[in-house]
Each structure stands twice: as C-alpha cells, then as structure tokens.
Length: 438
Image 1 (cartoon, one colour):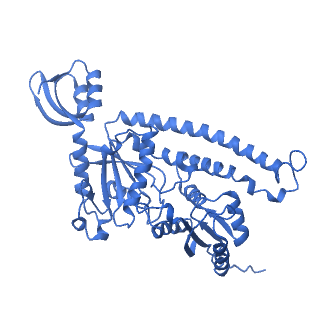
Image 2 (cartoon, helix red, strand yellow):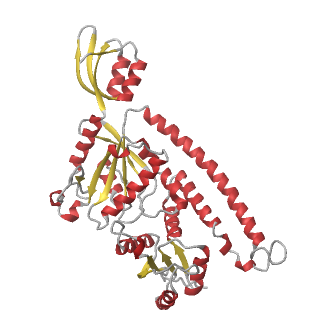
Image 3 (spheres, rainbow, N blue to C red):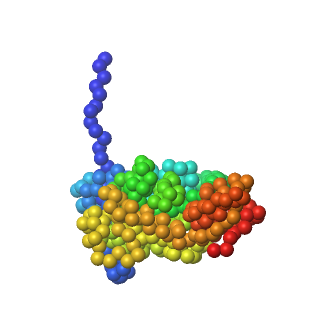
C-alpha cells in the first residue's frame, strides 16, 4: 500500500498585539506609545508569532473584568475573528480573571506582557542557572493563576456548604506540587551561585580585569562583543537574542589583557517574577572594573532606554548588589552611528564615544578609552627585586603593567603600574621586596 506524504507546511501562528495606553499616567520622559507598541510587536515576533494586527487602545478607566472598555472589547472581538487570530498579546499586566474573560470574549489564547517575556526567557536561556531561574519565575507566575486553570472541576467543592471554590482540592494539590518544586529550585540555584562565586574568586587570582557590557535589549551588545573578541556569540536583530553571560579575553592597545563579559539586555517594566532571575545574570556587572553601557543611538527612544537601564542598576545599588559608585566606572558607548552617518554627525558626544559594531567605526578609539580608564585606576610603583627572586618578578609581570626595568649585578629596579588591591597582595606575599621612593 502506498503512503501519501503531505507536503503542506506548518500553518503560521497568527498573532495580534494590543497596547492599553493610559496617557494621563505618562509624561514626556516616558517612551511614546508608538515606540512601546513597536517593542511589544518585536517581542511577540521573537517567539514565532506572525503579527497581523496591532493597535494602541487609550484607556480612560481600568475595568476589573477585562481591563479594556466594553466598546473596545466588542470592536476588538470583530477584528480578532476577521483576522483569525490564534494568540492575542496584551502589553500590560492582566489579572487571572481578566485573562480568562478576554479569552472567553475573543475565543483565542490571550497572554499578557509577563507571560510573553517568560516565554522568551524560557526559549533562550542556555546555562543551568538561566534555565533554573526561568523555571522558577514560570512556577511563581503559574502559582498565582491556578484559580483559572481548573474550572472543569467545579463540581468538586471544599469546606462546608457552599464555601470553597471550584476544584479546590485539585488546586491545592497543584499548589503544593509547585511549592515543593520552587523550594528545590531555590536550593539548586543557591548551589549554582556558590559555584559561580568560586569561579569568580578564581578569576580574581588571575590578573585580568573585567569589562562588562550592559544595555537595553537589541542595542548591539553581542555584535560589539563579537567585533572586539572575534567570537561567534549569537547576535541577531531581535529582542533578547541572548540571555546568558558570555566571557572572552581581549588584548588592549597597551598589551594589557582584560575579560569582556556580555550580559542580558535590559527592558522596561520587567515582570516582577523575573527581577531576581534578571539581576542574577548581572552578577558579572557587580564585579566589573569597567562597565560599557551600549546604547542604540539611532533608536528614537534611546534616552528612555538609558533611563530604564539606570533604573535597574540604581535598584541593584540600593540592594547592595553593586557598588554605589557604579556610574563612576561606566563608559557610555553610542552604537549604530553608521545609521546616522558616522560619529562626526553626532552633535554632542560629551564623555560618550560613538561607534558602529557592524562597520568597526570607532572600535580602536573605544579600546584606547578602556585602556586609559584602566590606567586611571592603577598606581605606579617602583620595586627593588633581587635577581634570585624570580617569583616576585613574575608576579609583577603577570598582575601589572611593567613600564621600566633596569638590572644591575644584585637586583632589578622595576617600575610597574598596578591596581591598589594587587599592590597590597604583592607586598603581603613578598615582604622581602620593598618599594622604592619615586
């Protein structure tokens, strides 16, 4: 018997993105509705939805049942049915009841901003810590919504008389299962953090300072990382193209070696369930000697994106996750200047530097600026090292930048540029070596 093979392609999932917009709640410093809608469409497209309908709906009041007004729901229902929408993304936080009511009205799956970002994080996380953090966030999100998942069990009632909600026994069983899994995940995450802490301590014993890339999602951090390191980290014109930290060593113009760290992209209104997961991916920033804040200077909402990045870092400083003086070790990197005609077209750079990670324009100047800032945080010291003490000389070459060396019959006068903490370690390890007066 012959087998007929179908050559039909999988049907694309048709999606719609709706932005409920409260104009009165936003001032001129907050991103415009158009930019916010564009970002939401990009997020939805990044999980494979084909967006065939998008709209901004002005909210006069928030309705507890559906968030949107009745007229808005009715007109949107007609558009959803006409476009045969499979998934409707509401770029706002929906309560479980609002999500259920909208699904009933529209006859399609409805997800809010939190669910959308959780889906993206779940699809992109690659390291063990990343997957554990995302699973934890998913479970905490699901636990708050169990009440809407078991309406088919409404004949099962708990408590006395009419007390107790639909499917209460099943809901409680699931809540306990999720709670147990959350406890296990938190223990696993603590072990992963301890392991990363050991790795970080091991890196501190290696003489390589850390330079961390931070910035809004899709600002070009991974493209810049690849351009500076020659690596092939996944980089695409896509929101949250990469989630997990990646590290590579690079050589600066002075010959000094540093470790470059790429981190997850920032985003506005990050779901509360993902804040801990997001901050955990920024641990390398807390340890960085220099922070490169990469901005998409060609984006019309670049200033608001910068504000979002600073808001997260300021929150980390308040929680003692990063040093309060983090801004003092930051370099502002204005990426994608090729879209504006080059760095010379920017009216005022200030302390920032304009580059293009795609064309390479400005990259030599960026490396020189990193070198210069590294030097500014180092001390210049002269030591008299006995020729017989090869370990001390080797330590200085490994941990500092040797500027000059003059040998005679009994020893070597070594002038070295070195970090203050490394100087303290050297003088503790090699007490027989004394610094010389300048």
